[in-house]
Amino acid sequence: MDKLSRINDQLESLFDDLSSLFADPDTLAFADVHCQMERLERIANTKAAIDAAFAYICERDDAGRSVGSRYPTAYLTEKLGISRSEAYSRLSRGRKLYAPPEPAPDTPDSTDEPNHDEKEKKDRRRAQDRAGEVSAEKQRIIDRELEALLPGASPNRAQLLADALDAAAGRSPEDLRRWVRRRVDQANARAPKPDRPKDPRGPYRNRSAHIGAQRTDGSCDITITAPAGEAALIKALLDAGLRPGSNLPEDQADKDSRTPAQRRFDQLAAIFNHYESTRSSAGNTGSAQGAASVVVSITLDDLAEADYATRFSTNTGIDINCYDLLRLGLSGSDFIVQFDRAIGMPLSIGKTRLANLPQRLVLLAAQGVCAWEGCTTPFSELEIHHLIPYAGGGPTDIENLVGLCRQHHRCNNDNRDFSGGLRHTQRDPRSERVGVAHPDGTIHFNNTDDATHAPGLRLRHRAPRYPQPAGGDPPLFTDPS
Image (cartoon, rainbow, N blue to C red; front, side, top):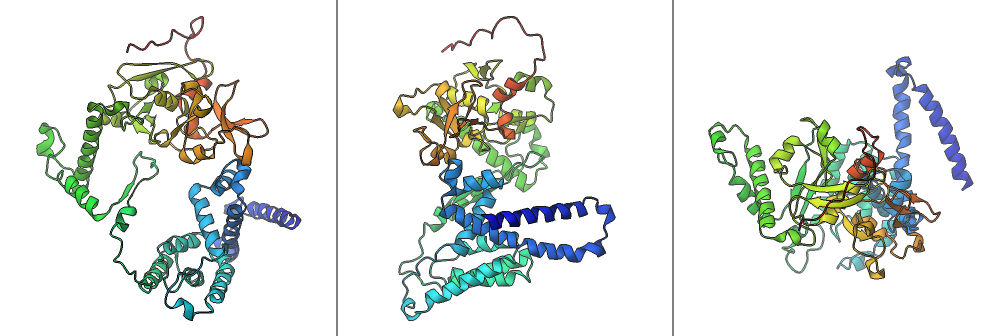
């Protein structure tokens, strides 16, 4: 599109000039630039509306196919370099602003409003006009709060969206969130009351557990939304650990200085550890997924150079240090994977105790995360995929297996013919790494930070540090069982 190309050329030149102006902040004074910077911020708000419109186009025109996926989020994250959460936000805002309105629910009052559709169109046009003046942050706040709107609420979604965008200009993000939430509550109160009582299973359907990203100190926030029954059970079990000395060795019980919150956490950890040991002792380790275990993936070099602050990769995507290792009791459960020194691929596996699923552990050591290019999903969330489909005669052995996250597993084209624009995983014959095959014949590998820290890949690129014995690799492990 020539016009869009010319606009981008102009913007690129103007932003180069702007960057040059601010290259040395010491030459600028606040009094000289703040008015124009405030104006620039208002101008930049237009980008949020453009982002939503483009996201709507991506979803409408199945843009995911252009990057070998079924989902528009794949295009947005791969080509625009944005996060998944930002991609989902843009798609959601695009639907609300530009997607055709859904039919109004059948209510007793609906037949008395012949102008309902026309009014909704006006509200949508008003929202589209205002969206260019509201920042992306405020639009995300509005979008999240409107998710709680019930069917048949009055005012409807289109009017509330337009009103919220009108109100956004004069309100801070925090105040805007409260303003929209109050309007949503008021609109929901006017929604038609169902003939039957409120679904008692609603809170159960809303149940969730989320583990947040790891902080720089290694800790994570864990958020649980629980229905009343399970919440009462969880609280009762955690409160049982509030007494002084609970979950501590006897010699430390009299000196318990933990806070109530710390005691609850220690009780929760004790419950999880008991569950894990019970599963293992009950003979569940041969199930399809194995016991719910934390698996540490390290090399001998990691151990040789480790100190108290060294962190080791795990199958969950959360790195742990030696103190964590000891508290989790991981010091006596060794599982050894031997890698080819040249290509960093597994040659054989051995174990000092019976392993649940050796193949999954080998893939963890080789991959670390999902094998799809650019993906950072940890191994504990992956599904095992046959490179050559099992239905097509593909064997279930380590050379034909790879770990993929649910999204990319569903995007993989098992026919391996690029039909529908979908790509597939394939082992590179030269490097033996598994990557994503593209229609042009190239194979793209996952070179994210997590993937490159998998032991198999680090061993591949490691320079020799000690004298190498003559000959090939050492003898393969034999399975004593």
